[in-house]
Image (spheres, rainbow, N blue to C red):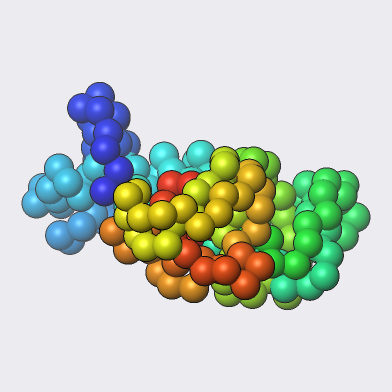
Amino acid sequence: MLAMSPDMAALCASIGTTLAHRSGASGPLMGSESMTTATRIRLGCLLVAAALGLPATAAAAATYLEVAVAAAVLFDAPSDKANKRFIVTEATPLEILSNLPPWTKVRDIDGSVSWIRSGELRNAGHLLAVSVATVHAQPSDTSPARFRVARGVLLERLGEPGGGWIEIRHQGTTGFVRSEQVWGH
């Protein structure tokens, strides 16, 4: 769960309570006196997150897909007539922010928000190094370093994150990288 200050929790609870009472709905989750503070906070945070374009829940994990075509255009709006912002290459991971078929709103490693045709995406199987990343023989800082990669280098993900490490492959060599050194998982 996302940590928040008492002031933010109070704000979210206030927004959730106001929404519940204004909706006129009743029941255990909306507008009734039995609505818990935690429910009010969650409901308020959903509204704040939606207004800011953040994930739907405070605890939502980021979802990533990758580019499925040799080169895909990122647009500044969900339209072929919109301004073209970037071209991204195959296997580049992108964070999914929302869907408006046939378009998907995405964020890249630099934080730029754009739109891509949904058909040009597939399940993510690659990661990008966020800085110089050290790839170890085993998932341990004391394990010998196999190699290092520069920021932006594409790595094939071989396993799911576990214990702060992810197994990867790069140019035929496998190893483990700290999960905070890569983006796209």
